[in-house]
Amino acid sequence: MNTLEQLASLQQAALAEIAAASDATQVDELRVKHLGRRSQLRLIMGQIGAMPATERPALGKAAGQTQQALQDALEARAGALASPAHEPTFDVTLPGRRPAMGRLHPLARLIDELVDIFRGMGFELADGPEVEDEYHNFDALNTPADHPARDLHDTFYLTDGLLLRTHTSTVQIRVMEQTPPPVRVVSLGRVYRKEAVDATHHYAFHQIEGLYVDRGVSFADLKGTIEMMGRQLLGDRTRVRFRPHFFPFTEPSVEYDFSCSLCDGGVPGCRVCKGTGWIEIAGAGMVDPAVFTAVGYDPEVYTGFAFGMGLERIAMIRHGVDDIRLFLDGDLRFIRQL
Image 1 (spheres, helix red, strand yellow):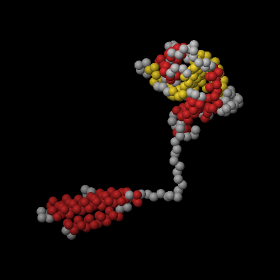
Image 2 (cartoon, one colour):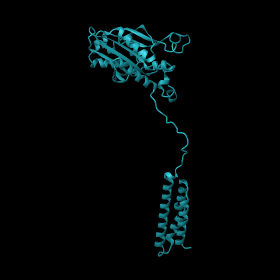
Image 3 (cartoon, helix red, strand yellow):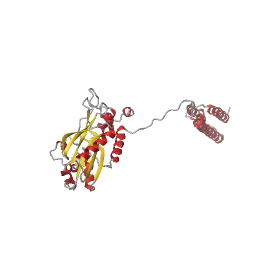
Image 4 (tube, rainbow, N blue to C red):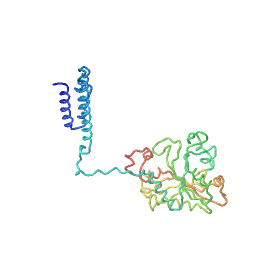
């Protein structure tokens, strides 16, 4: 059998093997077998240079045609095996798989609910920067230079006199600087304090604060607003208790508690109120005249109240969770349970 006959026989056998390939792996193996450096075709092509000069053109042409034919066959078979007709089938009678649905984080749901509650009472939503200056975070809120909250161990200080805000009261100052009375706003967002992280403390958490300034605003307005918020959040039977306290930016100042929504009266062993019947929420009070003076309001004409609370605190009460870190760690196993 001469060389031209060998090429024809090789091509015929190789094309038959390629046509019978059942998957992509076999196609790759045949590509190496018939076109690789150690293939029979490569061996024949390597011997053409030693052939008589009169035979070389015909042999070179035949070898090239065989090589091209094999390449075309391999590409066609690989494409055919990749077509939908050769993809693995599935059992259409199997029950469908319900797609995993996303949901809002419990803190996001609480924020939306609180915003709706306060908008229903006439409050507008205000926002402000998380990186603040000392004036808006402390000075304008009547916090003296020697107040412990301004110490390095309580506040995250940055460069150029800036800091991470320790409360959202900074937004109230910015609103009053730009808006004449009456003002009725709530501000919410993330705040930062140098706290040791444990079950009830975190260096980053969320606050919501409210401010109402107008002529004739009284302490009774403050109590009514907080009571309405508590009833819509924790149920119609929720009661409010005020306890005297001190804050630099309000006078008089109070801490306020909600009656326990779980036991409703101080049942011994209650996991929420510890048997006291009350749940400590946050602070409030009438805006100190010094704050009005700092923002250009006349304290002889206007009065107002301010209040605030931590959102994680409310979420812990509502869901019966005893560790604040669970709301902030981003563990989906926890989030999916609420």
